[in-house]
Amino acid sequence: MNPYDYIDAHRQNFLEELKALLRIPSISTLSEHAGDVRRAAEWLQAHFEQIGMTRVQLYEKEGCHPIVYAEWLGAGDAPTILVYGHYDVQPADDPDNMWRTDPFEPVERDGNLYARGATDDKGQAFTQIKAVQSLLAAGALPVNIKFVIEGEEESGSKFVHGFVEDNAEMLKADAVVVSDSSILALDQPSIVYGLRGMVSLEIEVWGPAHDLHSGMYGGIVHNPAQALAGILAALHDGTGRVAVPGFYDRVAELDAAERAELAKTPFTLERLENETGITNPWGEPGYTLQERLGIRPTLEINGLVSGWTGEGGKTVLPAKALVKISCRLVLDQDPHEIEDLIRAYVENIAPDTVTVEVRGIHHANPVVINRDSPYMQAAIRAYEFGYGVSPVFMREGGSIPVVETFQRVLGIPVVLLGFGLPDDNLHAPNEKFALECFHRGMRTAIKFYEEAGKL
Ligand code: BES
Ligand code: ZN
Picture 1 (cartoon, helix red, strand yellow):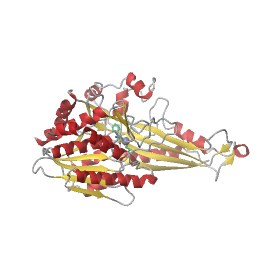
Picture 2: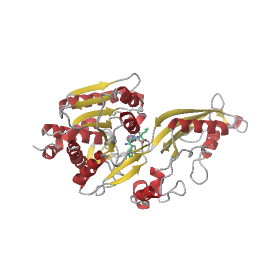
Picture 3: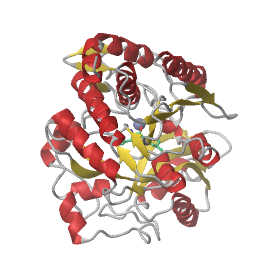
Picture 4: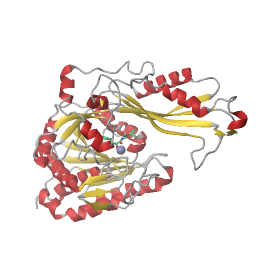
């Protein structure tokens, strides 16, 4: 049986297996789920053994989540492809009751599979695994395969950078393939060639030793929430530009040719409204929406807590206030340098009536991928086969921290072979993966390996 018939014959099986993986709440950011993260790693380990990968191993490090490694080197002198994915997921907290069904009990509805991790990234990583399984079962896998599936992409990928550096020999390959992004639409596949980097931080502001009665102390003690609001308001100017001195110093401006290339895949107001309900966009002047997402850096407030937010009123002067912030970074910004700039600025503008601390959380380098590698050509042919349309190139606003590490440390071409759709609700309620994306993704991945085998 050829691999394409194999996926058709096993459609239902594959779906049930993916559901089993999605039922494990492997949330890497929450320590109470560490056991579930481990369970997902072991599930994958057993699965890789079952589909015929010849060496399967968990790599572990104190305080980190396991990396699942699996290889099959039966293709001799043919190229070797390193396939990366992540089995950890974002939290599925649901304060506003937005999930229509349990995030960890996958359900099929209207041609979609709904669950946390359905697209990001269990579903897409699984698409790769099933493509390889189908080629193996057909006795037709034309390349050597090394899988690296990590368990802390959503919590900053701390372990994987050192893992790649320490195991560069074991990971030696001709190209890396990553399925953890989306295409523009089912009738318009696209290949992401730029990802933004990131630095995330938290800022804590302390005032009094404990919460105070706002009538007894309000007016004579600086309120930490108010002091923090002042700091936050000073992080942008009135137009949407980041006001941290030096923030833009290393940002590479794009030439007209590349801006014209980006303009071919505009982010329309219609798409913005469909996906977000927003009709009035915001952001840095002088750049299109697509440019603001792909080639410009940002600073966002991710979360903010202080004082009383429960039912009714409580006249309290809170003892402290906390904010979580993240910046999306572009070439040639350095996440550690940006952290230092923000810390220096915040300490400089903080009033001396409160105490302020800035702590770094995640760091990821931005990356731009060479579009001319033969593996990129193989990817183009694979999408043409899977979708019947040539893919366009685009830059993406999200981050996949290890991609830059692969490119720099292993020195080999990377291909982002994404199968998701823009409305998959990743990191949000009602995350989904379209069954059609799963199916076309497997066909595209199989074709990619067939094309790569000819190189
Ligand atoms: N799959 C996403 C990255 C992504 C999002 C790629 C949208 C393309 C389109 C990935 O799992 C992710 O969310 N990464 C985090 C990394 C962070 C926690 C360091 C991100 O971008 O926020
Ligand atoms: Zn994600």
